[in-house]
Length: 188
Image 1 (cartoon, rainbow, N blue to C red):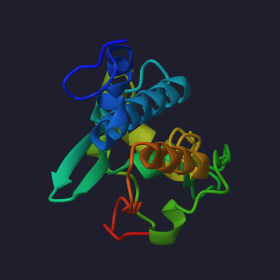
Image 2: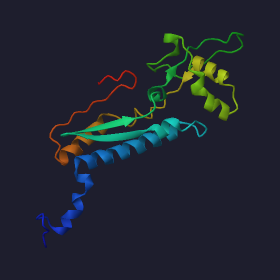
Image 3: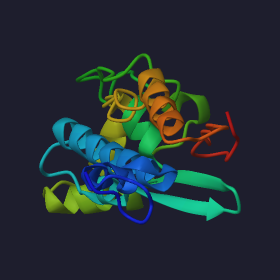
């Protein structure tokens, strides 16, 4: 076999593409993560739900001197969609019906602060479906929001281990994984 100027056999050049660089691994990881999150969200959300959250799922890769930074971005309410929100439950003022909660396990609850979800967040869906947004607001407040686990089912320890292993294969020496909480910006 003939070798090129780099001393590499021509047949081996095919395997030296972008997937064998740290940036290439991160790009492939981001593409797959983005696709998996969007697909998982599509399975969990009805066809009449606005696609705002799905379309907001993007990632950014930055090279900072000797380090790479991978950042996953999406609408700030993603965690409520992923884990759901507990409603306050109870009985209607008329006493004719009781509100059955859709979620009893979420760390988020309307009962904790007593705030109802903002009308502005519910209006697009309400108007698209011919429903009064105030009725939707009350339903969500009392019944809660069902967890979709669109994020939790995708982002787990195995995903991080696979990424670390792949980065080590292409020569990454030191790997730090930092996840920022969506609302406080705190590293965990």
